[in-house]
Image (cartoon, rainbow, N blue to C red):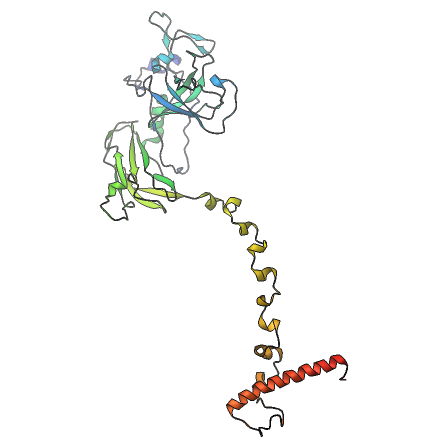
Length: 414
């Protein structure tokens, strides 16, 4: 924006790719733990470089595996390769001419028709790591160029002919968009959901990175980052808070407009803690006017918690409930004596007689007496004798009943 108006209005200085970036305004924030700091490759006003030729970074993409952009299979996993900035950014656009849409050769000291087009395209090239010089392919377009903590742009395309046995990848620089982004946001930004998600039982050391970026027009003063609560150890011995969580680098100091910095926290650095449940702490990012924010260690659900009906998550009897080994014996053979109620199995058992013959005197509360002249007792008896007589009456009654039934079955009784 500090360039003269004649440059601003000159298409030769504004031929950057104007369809590679978009700003979306969301109704609500998308929860995210971290991210990268947006950065231009070079300060267009001062010439300060933020990434130099020869500085390598890992490029990730889903593009075709055909070498040099040739048709090839689509990968099923995210691919990666080592790349580097091929030459300084201004030289990328300093050309002797434009040949049918293809970029002409780089300018040399003897060139008369050299012109600089302030385009967004930047040249990157693969590094030979012993596996061949990597190149980009169809499907890689849009992949981010991230070196360290900084995002510099996204892949735009590639030249059709190799240079020094390598294919040059063209990247659209984010630098041209920085003023527009600042006007749209006009705030200091940081992740909406700070923390980390771990598997249950994890006891490893983890680094938590929190980007802070100043998208205002004023210099921000940041106080040191402070974390409180949530990580006090529950072990014996001389263990201090910093054994669990320590700020390895913070953003204390001045944060210029558009500038960003990365807060890094080291969690569980001495492996004292095994995470079994969610841990809730708080973090003060040191930003004036920003309240203390939650800092959370969440426990990821296991596969079986997410998929309880997956066969691998169910035991044999869950999958085969009607298998004989999975059923109680009485479920599949209810007529076994041990599975039946005694009175269903033997209705004439003494303890079942009242269920079988509820009119019996022992069951109706009446006096239980022996038949007249039965045992020569002469009539009345004591309580103890009555109890004995009751038992005798029961046995006699059962024998009589069984005898009568037997005679009836033989046709001797009408």
